[in-house]
Amino acid sequence: MYRQADRFLAEFDGSGTQRTYAYLLVDHLRWLDREGLSPEAASLNDLKRYMAAIGAKFAGPFGEPWRDRPLGQSTLGTAASCVKGFYLHQAGLGINERLGGQLNLTRLPSRADREWALLGHLRQAMPANPLAPHRVRRRHPKMLPDGAKVRLLAAARTARDRMVVTWLADAGYRIGELCGLHLSDLHLREGAPCGECRTPHSHICHRENNPNRAAAKTKWPWSLEDGTVRGGLIKRVSPAMIHTYFEYVTTEYPAGAQHGMLLVQLTGPAAGQPWAAVAARRMLRRAGHRAGLGTVLPHAFRHSFATAVLDAAGGNLMIARDAGGWASTAVVDEIYAHVDITDPAFSAALRRVWGDPG
Image 1 (cartoon, rainbow, N blue to C red):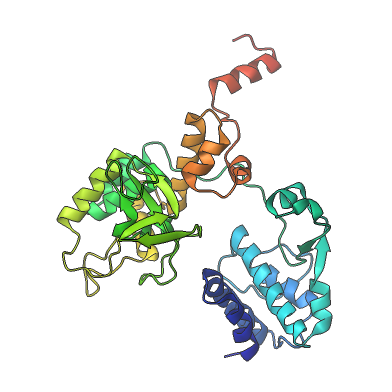
Image 2 (cartoon, helix red, strand yellow; image 1 turned 90 degrees about the vertical axis):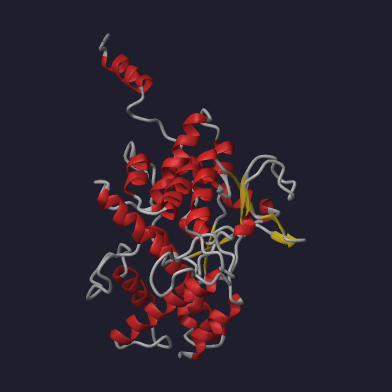
């Protein structure tokens, strides 16, 4: 164990960020060892080479590739934050202070920064990260093919799997949110005792101690009062979701389960234990190939759900934000709020520009 890395991670007090940073920091320290470097002697150019080795763009040679597949845009940003934070922590202890000074940059606050921050109008500078990759705006996310839900339901082999497909498609859950649900989070009858939503709904609650290590990304405050869950992120539940839930619970859910989690392993030595998110991803991959859809990713359901809600709501970003559980409408606007190029109105507009009366 590298003592300084352990001291840096201890600052996060067991949160989900600590676990994510631990994986990324171990990867970085292993790369340093492969390159014959140490955290005490690393330079800014070395850190940029590391970012290039895991997938970021870099103007120059960076040596041997470090991964079979480059990291995605979001993970690259998290890795850049982790590496910067670690070396700033080092510099604060008097180690490699020159590198700490090169990383401790600022930039002018943007309009979004001022809107997000408390008393944002007083902000004169914001922290900047020279390691962070250039942000790519994803205007056309990968969605499910037409009819994918029906074909996946036909290819699913258990009631649990049919429930997973239905809940992902009808509510746009993240896979960590779905696998992290407890039975107590589900209020599937009218007039639930929580008093926070009259119609059937679920409460998405961030828990760090789930036995399957699945955790919701959002950390809305929640509480358990007299056996009733209140707060968290509330999501409406469709009739089809309720139907698949009762089919699963009455036919496959083990009667003696003590952990209280919703999704469980059905076969093998771990039967009855909480079902991990990686197992859910593998199930969807297998079902997708059986259905002739190729590899199906859980997040494609979320993209399709958000686009469908936005279209049905007439482009209302507030409705789409709350239905999907995003923190702001800016994310919805950036990713999903674009015109459908197959829309008849779009085609008619182009024909007018082209001078085509048809």
